[in-house]
Image (cartoon, rainbow, N blue to C red; front, side, top):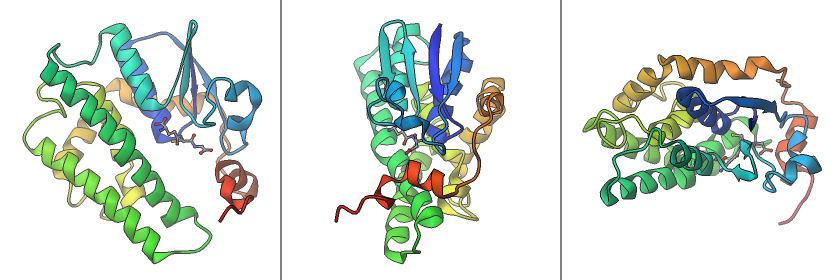
Length: 228
Ligand SMILES: N[C@@H](CCC(=O)N[C@@H](CS)C(=O)NCC(=O)O)C(=O)O
């Protein structure tokens, strides 16, 4: 059975959404990143980047949420747009936009707003600005179509949902104010039973919730190693 290495964080949750939507049987294996499970040799053999999610599907190992979504969609033939060059171009472009923009900038905005030991106005402004800019581009696209690629619900919508559903955590209070179209998509996906099962998956295992010294050191290697 497909093994799904996960935590309650946004990137694993979008993969959980796909698995639930597609009805694929899977074994959910917790990786408690606040306890440092991501750095254990057994897990590093699956994902050398020491992050979740990852999957093991027979002899295929896939890490990075965006790669996993593309892999699973192509393997099952589900949640893909029509088979045209135009649609494939849009699919890949928006998947990479989320992978290289929405995810990293949202993650850094959360980091500098909530976890950095010093409140650095320059860093907070840069990452919140960039996160906002990326969400605005998604919102503008969704002003003209129901889903990211048109009339069909695809992995791009799942990818977008992963971080967009956490906009208040990323941007702070009032975070949703400027993104009505994006909110419409997130609200619609939230009502899907598969999304509710994906969000509830974390309750199957007891993950550490405290962000104490052990958790900070496990997740933020730079705290214990000065390189610059
Ligand atoms: N590009 C990767 C990013 C993965 C990532 O940053 N995962 C976070 C959870 S959302 C994680 O594992 N954090 C624990 C850590 O950094 O130690 C993806 O999309 O899967």
